[in-house]
Length: 392
Image (tube, rainbow, N blue to C red; front, side, top):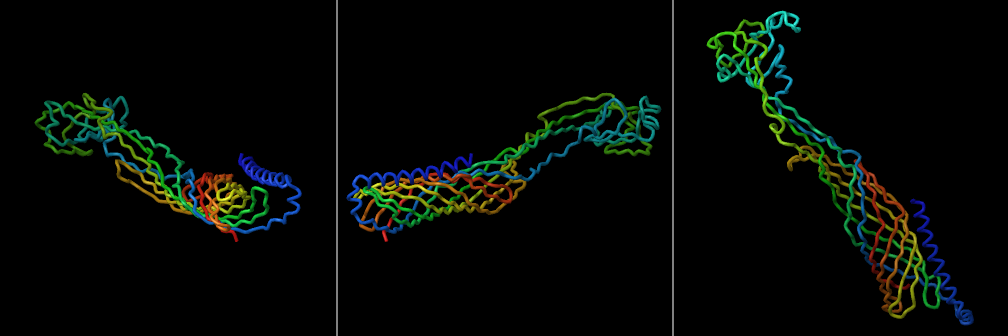
């Protein structure tokens, strides 16, 4: 595709040149006697200089990688520490514990138990946990489900439209009855700048919380319970309670824990592009007194230099949790073609002013690389050009 576009551009320039030469030949051939007797037209040099406005190019950025988003979860007692309700186990509660001592369940601790299912290795924190002939414990449960979302690796932005300057030197190479043709060598410069970026969701997680209430039947007079806070030992001895709760109740569920948490990738890109354009083309101008037309086409060489600054941050509720910056510069060169047309105002024999519209087609996007990515700059676009010309 790119080779086809390159060939098409060269083909257009060649057709324009051939057409102009053909018109000159036909016009001169209309009056052979006069043409033969007229002295050959003297070649003239001229220079032009002036400002131009060019529409800002489009830039596609490609990011190599973004840092991993940091995240945290609130502390909570995992569900597994409460333990099962139908067999001996070590259980941790918000307000105490019930664990296996040396004699609980026998020495092998397998089902069916060879020994008793009681323990003196337990503890509690508050007198309110004693309810009649029962001892009540409470355990929080918590579960979190998170999802890391792949960050965007490409985005686009438009650079600002900018003014630049162009200087050209030309030489008349033929002079027909109603027009002249010249070869032009030009040098133009402009600088573009722009900023863009995105805020995309990078990590989201939700939580589920609940409460387990385990009730243990007391085996002895509640009045003999050691006062809280109490913490028994594995070796004992101490007040004995069952290791297995007589009943368990669960409450709560999704939505009882912390609310949905969202963390965003915030990416900001700044870029400055300097563009130098060397042009070589054919220019034709009508002979129309004070006002005439001007048109031209040719080849261009586009030198591009780009500076980039990319800033990344992980943001939660407007607060940056982490950040990083990447800066770099690169340059490249691309070929293209141009075509232009406009009006020429002859102020005097040697001085003229021109106003032209110009279209530049660059065969390939300019590719520049930076430490954390690369950019493709589409330099194809339109310009409005003004210039003052002086014949030498």
